[in-house]
Amino acid sequence: MRSYPEGHPNSRLHGHTYKVEVLVEGRVDDANGFVMPFEDLEKSIQSVRGKIDHSFLNELPGLEDPTSERIARFIWNDLAAALPGLKAVHIGRESIGIRVSYYGKEL
Image (cartoon, rainbow, N blue to C red; front, side, top):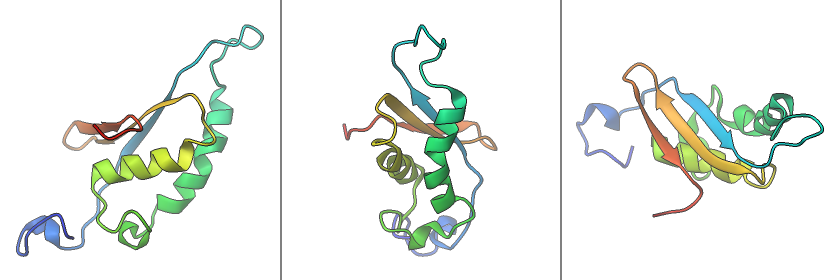
């Protein structure tokens, strides 16, 4: 992996299990009581899940060096058109209790 110097433990192929959270915001629809029903959100994320779940991320265009931040941006870019209320994508590693967040723009 390009992010780490040769000899660093993370420079070799390795894997992680991530928890992904997608945050949408908007007005609550008075007719159904939702900003977006969870079922609709789930349908929207199926495409990106199919691309990254149990995949060799280094082989996906845009994820050749798959840091958590790049994974969050990849997911954002995949979901943005389908979810106009997309506010954030959070990528967490529960094993160490940290996460990164992407809000659709580079700071």
